[in-house]
Image (tube, rainbow, N blue to C red):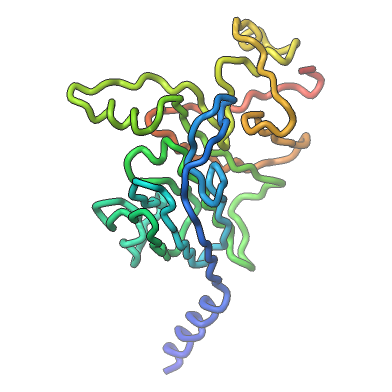
Length: 262
């Protein structure tokens, strides 16, 4: 009897500490300038990339997803989530669920880990339907690694050709290769046909030796690079996810000495 009592208390304590994180999302196209060139992006509640979900370990995520697209079906795949006990929430069209038809709403409910989410119907991920899902340690628990700050980086490839044209080319017989992406985006921001390195007169030779013009931005431009501010002798955690459709990427941080000038 005592063993059962301990089990019940443990379950109740876990239930009391966990929370339900509920979101209402509407997905539709909008015009944007992800790499300083106007194009259509897929946005969640008007936001591109989609909103970041923050939760604690053990929490339950509930997302009410409404399809505001005019002619396309819609699903969201929660990348890397094992979906134990909730296979219907995996978000694979034609496998775990039917695509959400225009004007309809589907509710996803599951217990997550730290990964990211993206569209899983046609080329919707390439259109910009993706975002981060960040799970921190539960209250009273500590992360296995100590750090002073953290950054969340989403990498993606971006084509100027419409996603419908991309899909037609890739599915054609014979296949029509769509070529390399015009830009690589970090958190939905990139620069097309210009050089960021050209802005720094003292940049290393490998980056300053370029024939591309210097990138020009106005304050608040969507395509302006996001600046990450760090302090010396601090440890930072980088949550890195690649939501690319076709590109395989390497990621590196170029270190420099404090006395170097950019």
